Image (cartoon, rainbow, N blue to C red; front, side, top):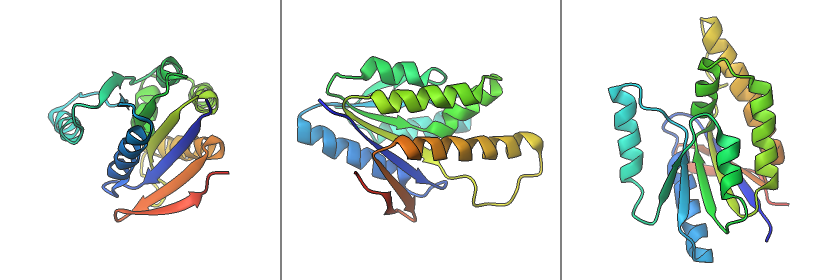
Length: 177
């Protein structure tokens, strides 16, 4: 069994999660598998709880959820080789969790890319493209933007396919080789 990975990027409310979910459901249907959703968000406030609930309501009973707010590479490895269609949403929330935990972001990014590269099955990863706005006015936000840009570049390099979603429209950036 071989693996393939799709990396879906887009801005806030671009339609990236909807696009990634539709691709995961189609892929799962094609191979007769139930999709797995790997959630990286943590509900620290009412607004985030509401966002999580909206995303959960969009998924039907076929979906199984795995929580991985910090140890995402291990969660991906645990699903490796099981014929799974796995959707990770999203890398920027995972990065935020690690940044706030003062984790080694370079090491975490390298471990994630290694897990993506060895995944046997269908892996779809979602991330925000955060570098198109104004330069933030505080050091933490600037560091987050820099780290998100580095992580997105690294994941795009190892992914089989990369799609940018803007205004609900997917644009192919990297085709399957």
